[in-house]
Image (cartoon, rainbow, N blue to C red; front, side):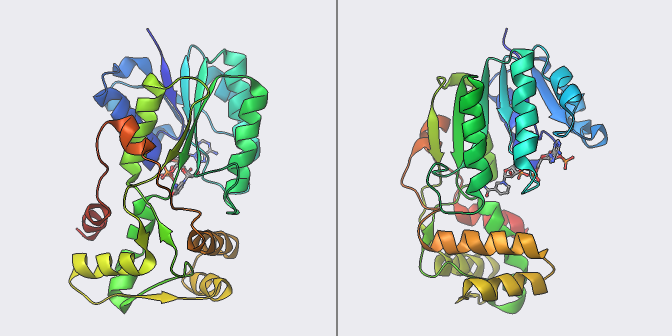
Length: 285
Ligand SMILES: NC(=O)c1ccc[n+]([C@@H]2O[C@H](COP(=O)([O-])OP(=O)(O)OC[C@H]3O[C@@H](n4cnc5c(N)ncnc54)[C@H](OP(=O)(O)O)[C@@H]3O)[C@@H](O)[C@H]2O)c1
């Protein structure tokens, strides 16, 4: 019997990965959901999953949470700038607990990505290599849901703003990445590196056109200089540091950093991905 653990299991990706593991035949009792807030884990408890509480900042709790775990899906932390110490704690705890394999949710082409967001992922990949724990790298592209968050303001104003120029991206549904992570945990060999992306290659004008098609309202893409887009995000209430990271990611997308022709996502899952327009339509409803 193999015991699987998933961190960030109260989050979108981690929760969907637990669901996908169960759908792929793993008994809920063989899944450890690592969460920092048990109050959010009601659905996991109801599903029969073994819920254990550990914050990424708490090495002792992490070590206890990973006791008896054979394979771990380490979902990258969501606090940009804090992720390296957090991931260090998880990897150290996994080593101490004798975890046999870690699958880590990294970023597309982390080893050479120009995105500011890639730095912590690149450093985490190095930590994993140094740990000598067998590793699977899940280098995720952008979630389609990232764009779905822009749908409501874009429909309200008729403008979808960004700083990606004419660059194209290959986003995929978050649940598809989660399902691929589950498949990888079950089947992938140690040392595997998967560049994961959707099969549609969309410019931001294409994304605006999808917003218009789905909503029935006119939406046009407005390209801004990176500094102007950062300022627009700050005006919309995004904290300055994160606005800069988002605008940097858009500028990188403009240069192809979030595009890929890799078919690893569909290959791992054994099925084509969720169409971009379907994710956007779901956000509308
Ligand atoms: N590729 C992309 O487009 C993209 C987009 C967004 C994020 N990401 C990355 O992918 C990860 C997963 O995405 P997601 O959509 O699932 O994010 P999410 O819904 O925000 O979930 C993040 C999960 O991490 C947990 N977490 C955060 N800080 C923690 C800490 N200090 N200790 C323990 N758990 C902690 C959260 O717990 P709580 O539920 O208690 O908050 C939550 O379960 C993100 O964390 C981020 O690194 C990628």
